[in-house]
Length: 160
Image (cartoon, rainbow, N blue to C red):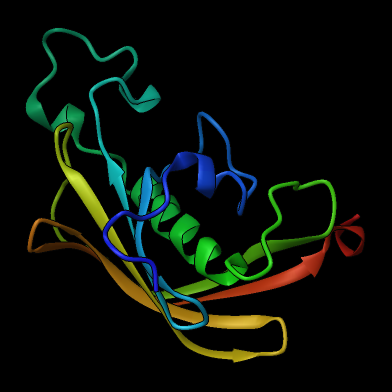
């Protein structure tokens, strides 16, 4: 297990192929390979999703978009899936694909200045398919629940 020092962006980029502007994780705080992972994303007012918001926009205009919150959690799940066999090159080797999600619930908005903590747990693995579950928190408040998500790993050549 990796302790409180964790792995930063440079380490994350050695495991998954995501890059700016869609790399939505900042640090891995803890990981037990094949079991669980905790990663964080700091939301700032300079996120690309906030471009073009006018001066007269209300506070709701700065709610972090739910699809990006979901993608950020899914990237943490991909990290767990690829931890022991990293592939930062999406054009070669095996890639992680999201299959389906069930019982996803969003509870409250996330805004700039807040840090999201994603918790991912591996429920079971069958061949190249993995069932993940978890949640996202801001402080002690759950902002998103992931009932289950199916991920699969496939050779890039099989996707052509």
